[in-house]
Length: 465
Ligand code: IMP
Ligand code: MG
Image (tube, rainbow, N blue to C red; front, top):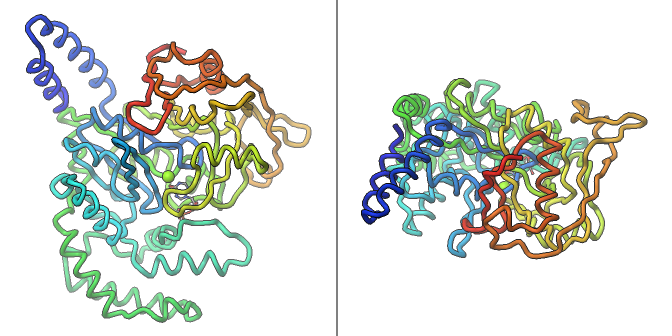
């Protein structure tokens, strides 16, 4: 039985007066039934990232014993607003903001030691204790300063393809991982070996790219001293994440796996090459944490009520005119990591259906529905027109995708504020219709609707679609 269930029954009993005790026990039994069925859940982005996963993970973490990140790195930007204060986390799991959770960073994540230590210090300065409840896999790879230099240099010097990366060194670090030359966190265990490997990597990289000035300007001894200092601070955080998760699963713990980026940024299933360098689909949770697929009980896909993307690449429902600008301002669509304006467009059910397929999504969390409050009419892309064909399914060929035109179904806007509504039945008719249309087009229920940035602005929708 889950640790959190023990805690809940205890809390309910303590809080209950005698009259309320039976109700408390009944409530706890409902929670037990629900949680026992879904102890290990993945929450991931069903579009191009920035769907609002941070808030959803933060909410669900309330009932989780463990929150884990499995891929990506400090390219993520998860914004969470608590009591009016905004926290942006790039590397730590959003669940860290709940003091009862244990948080893991799995082998699939690439770790920038600088960001890791900065985020720990920032949270601890806010009174959030991190050190004894954050653990990092020794099998995770390091993002080193030269990876960040290479990332920016490749972007600036590339004659053909500009990806619009976050500049956080993600691509070069994953390249080194797959190329079998990178340093992993377990190299920290052996100081001399770590020093030798780091020196040799620095030499090799500088030798390979003589034309990159920033690389040539690096002071190797200074970098090494800095890396050794960070090593001291990070060593106590190392723990075999796969083993810990296995033990926790056997003990019945409730585990939330927090995806970063989104389905269409996945290295295999995204809009390649305009993607990130990890598997951000649900499969990445298994390879990025060292747990088997039979241990996953559910996948929640986070969908924004409209679509955004940062960086380059095709975007079928993009609105390039005034309406796109209006959406950006209404939704405050600026990158949490880079501050770049996000490209905005209508909701795309072709993408959402694809996300359901490649991730095995069994329910959606629909976010930022309130951003559409003022619009008189709202378009939903139901299929693509490619030359004289109608495509219901997301194409695998980027050349085809680039030429696709959206086929829209238009629904009437509700033109009323939905902020503060917490009951699905109290939503305006138009908003209900919008949600139901998405459910119908994707054959997937919307179980959570977010109508504002705060934890309280949320509808838990138990209604069957
Ligand atoms: P990289 O992950 O920094 O290599 O960037 C590759 C592409 O993924 C770029 O288009 C980025 O804008 C995008 N990207 C990476 N991380 C995120 C994210 O967390 N949210 C949205 N887009 C992202
Ligand atoms: Mg983000």
